[in-house]
Length: 92
Image (cartoon, rainbow, N blue to C red; front, side):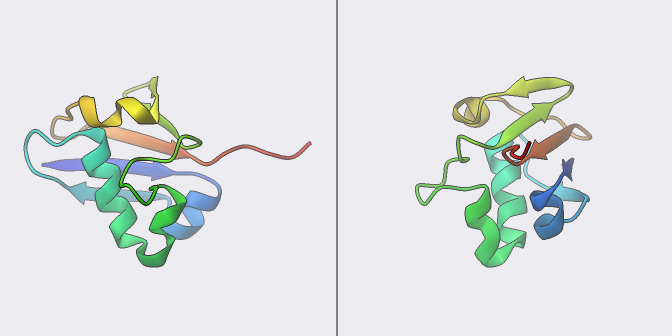
C-alpha cells in the first residue's frame, strides 16, 4: 500500500518535500516514518531514536489531526493516506 509523506523545513532538506512510501497492509504511522527514515541513511536519527521510536519533538499530522509520536505505533494506515512531518520550531 502507498502512503504519501510531506516534510517541511529541515526534514524536507533531508527526505524531500514529498515521498510516496510502500508499506505492507496493516502498517502503522511508525512503520511509514521508519521506512522514510531508512531512505535518509545516516540522517534517520533526525526522526528516529536509537530504540526505533519517533523522536518526541517530531510533529506528525495524519489526515488533518496531530498525532503524538508515542501513539504512532498504534494508528493503522490505509492505502492512499497521507502524513505530514514537521521538525521542532525555533527562532524569534
